[in-house]
Length: 434
Image (cartoon, rainbow, N blue to C red):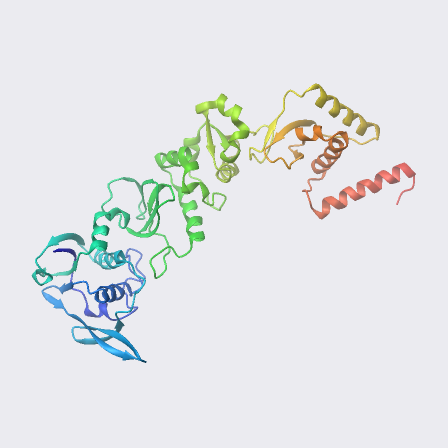
């Protein structure tokens, strides 16, 4: 028969199996355990499933047994440790998975010293020997435990050979792939088989709950974004920048607080950045630039531009100050468009209404946008020229007033401004002033 053997230096305190919530490691950031419940649940699971188990504290064997009791008409099995009654029953951890048992016992070993895990063959568990000055666990292997051993990297990071990056705070990045996998201090705390991730992460700062999984997905993604922004390793940033659109990292909270390291700027260099979501809109530019452009999620692109400003180039920079890649100038208008624009401007001049800013025609990625006021320029959607001079004139006036006042769309102050503008025109026409 095969057995899992887990050892660590030192002799275990028997109370570790019975004193719920007791943990000397809770305030030690270098330790994995903190809740003081994992070993108790593991014991309950193994006894409930009747999986053969043997534990030695040095040469002394720790004995476990269960005794049936009646609890308000129901049968429960109370756990005894070295003949001492505990408050634990075998019904604890009913929703546990088998790998949780390996996790808890191995984590405890890692928190001590000289931890090791191995597979051994014995005729029976009675043949399992103690080890001097070590705590030793033997657990008979069933199919579930064998799956954990055979796929160790899915559960623990300590044997992985594909390390890409590490820092002084025990954070490590491994090669990712078709799944997302997160460890906290070497122990899996989240696994999503069908969510592609550029990296597999082992991060000491992840906050977990008593089920040993990530406590808050929102907080975790927020903190992970800040962490990736801060990494100063160009090889890691290069992997992110050139591959992010196909992976989990694309949807992180790139607009969150936190500065990018200088490595981001070095990797981007002189390349032109194009918003991934609007790539079709910039198809011609992509063909022209080819290997001189990088497609990035718009939230990441905007956050980079906000920090680095003119040090990076974003498609549409020459026309839009917020650099979202939302606008594409029409450099050569057709005769009909030019005629309609000239007619509209002539009409406004004859009113008279002063158009103080240059007017340019553009395509917008958002078809609902008919005009924009940016950089003391009026941008009109090409779509307006299919709607007639009245719509063109209306858009020119609105964007002209936006430029003059700096007021935003759909605000009370801008509405009031337009009403006053209309009243003033009535005053001029009537010769009566209010």
